[in-house]
Length: 151
Image (cartoon, one colour):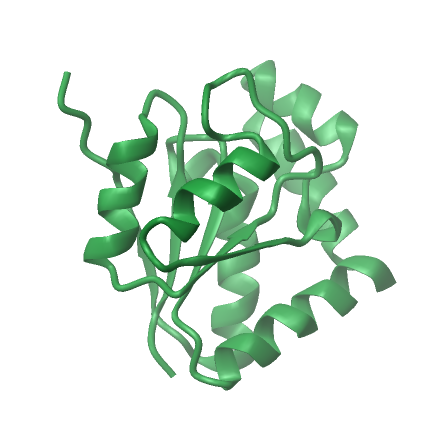
């Protein structure tokens, strides 16, 4: 099994994210936002799936691995410890565990996966908690991608 990548698109552009995915040889982008819409052009679910397809990357949305509304509110307020507590409680639910197992199965099959969310700083994002759960379950390395912008 190869490493599991993560990426946040906050402050980034579609071309920069695509370049980061290409460089990391990602095969499957797993969107773990509870709500796969975005005010940033090109990052809403349908547009994102079409954009990553242009570089040969598949797209999968696993909504059950997204942060619940109260966790998103805590994150927006900069209450990272509160967001973490809320998300870890959510991650223990049957739905989230089922989706984590789907993700783990894809990785076991040898798919090069990248977890996507909005937050640029992986240390403040729930995707790191999902990645850590995968690392514990599978023993995989975690690589946090940092898309470089041209501007």
